[in-house]
Amino acid sequence: MISYVNYKGETVELDSSKHAKPKSTRPDKGAYHNGWRVVGHAPGAMEEAMTQRIKDIATAEKEAETKRGIKIPPPWNEDLWRRNTKKTAVRSKPYEVPEAAQECKRLAERAGWLDVEIIEIKKDGK
Image 1 (cartoon, rainbow, N blue to C red):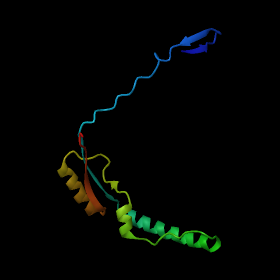
Image 2 (tube, helix red, strand yellow; image 1 turned 90 degrees about the vertical axis):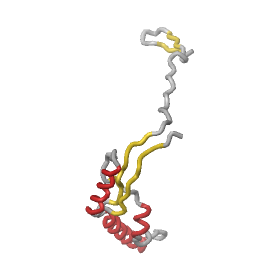
Image 3 (cartoon, rainbow, N blue to C red; image 1 turned 45 degrees about the vertical axis):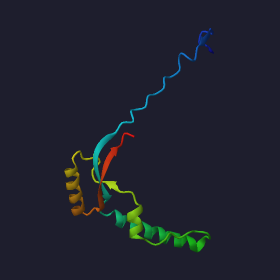
Image 4 (cartoon, one colour; image 1 turned 180 degrees about the vertical axis):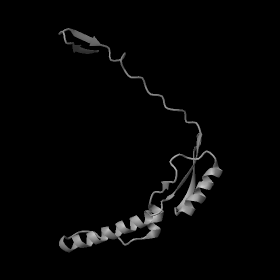
């Protein structure tokens, strides 16, 4: 029991068990398939990252001359960048047909995208 005083000065008692929020129901753990997404590195993204790394190294070296303990970032490594950088979606909406995703991959590679791949968006019902 919870008791309150309202704006008129009267005591009001409420049973908290009656006003408890119902538990939210979780969606079924069934399997679903949402299509195919084409992802890769956009044209020019690698060059941007490389110039940013060069700028970061230059500023760190400049600060290291005046301050102690400044760590200088490692030099640019294209292979490391390609493996560790998150790929962006070529199209925000996934394709429903795998042939359409394959065509999008081919067009993206022709347009200059790097490391283009098709990802199937699905969940097993286990």
